[in-house]
Image 1 (cartoon, rainbow, N blue to C red):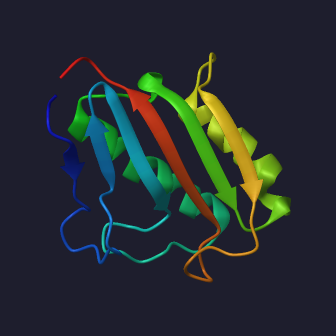
Image 2 (cartoon, rainbow, N blue to C red):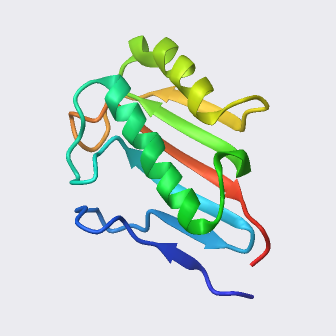
Image 3 (cartoon, helix red, strand yellow):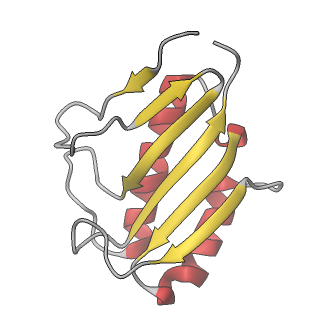
Length: 129
């Protein structure tokens, strides 16, 4: 059995004790990714945070040799129900075109940083290791 491959956070990003993603076999598990910029700061506003979430997920997928088309499951965590409609529009553009991966969207009371408005985690199927 091949070893588990771990993907580190980008250089200069202060991260809690976790891998940004782990690969086992042909599955890539991407940790919940918030909307931080390349310096680790959270962007202001929902749309800006969503854009950075997508960019951060893309970086991980690129590093693993995958694309958004390889995603099989996505979990979206929002702190405001009022962002669901906007998220659906942005999501369709970023994760499309159809068919889309399976998805769960939850509105939660809070995320680890009070300024976090969204976090997305996902699973991708990769080529055999």
